[in-house]
Amino acid sequence: MDGNGRWAKKRQLPRIEGHRAGIQSVREIVTACRELKIPVLTLYAFSEENWSRPKSEIQALMSLLRRFLKTELEQMMEHGICFDVIGDEGRLPASVRQSIARTRQSTAGGNQMRLTLALSYGGRSEIVHAARRLAQEVAEGKLDVASITQERFAQALYTADLPDPDLLIRTSGEQRISNFLLWQIAYTELWMTPVLWPDFRKEHLLEAIEDYRRRERRYGRVEGAQAQ
Image 1 (cartoon, one colour):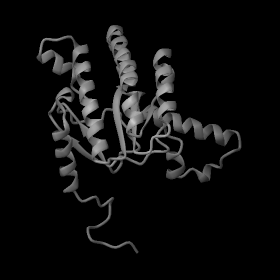
Image 2 (image 1 turned 90 degrees about the vertical axis):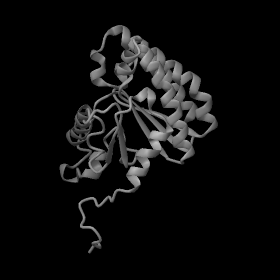
Image 3 (image 1 turned 30 degrees about the vertical axis):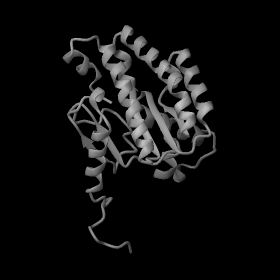
Image 4 (image 1 turned 45 degrees about the vertical axis):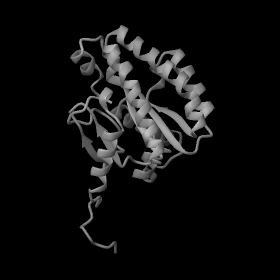
């Protein structure tokens, strides 16, 4: 969800106003995905690299996050949205962790849609974290090295209970992955748009989905070939 700062700068506003405007885009896209019966939506909200931003901006972002979780809880429960977070939660402020825990618990029964926020998240760190988990199991004699397959490795990731993404949308004209779900997006379709995140609306989501529908996903197979 990129472009909040540039959106604010274009309007000669403080950066935090761009983040505040971006929350409305989150609301609209979550609602649109629910209406379209898209079962899983993951939003890259705060990367581990974002910790290098000014302290005042980080504090403001965390305050906006807490407010979002509080104000949206009723809607999530009403519409059967199960909320979760992936990333290094230990780095988040205690007040944010408490809000996350409360929202997780309150929405645990949601079975219509899974909404995941990537917070303090980095794809490389996630892979290292998974490798350490498996190495610890090997060291404790709980796991044989030969049994570490791609499937077993995926089970050690933050996203163990999520399917790999079908579609990744990158806003604001950026043409890179930026350390997001590096393992999981091996065969994900990418869609880039120059639209800044605070301006991203349902019409843009539908445009991305329509483009995705026209693509043929072969996963390395030859077109029209049957499995032997």
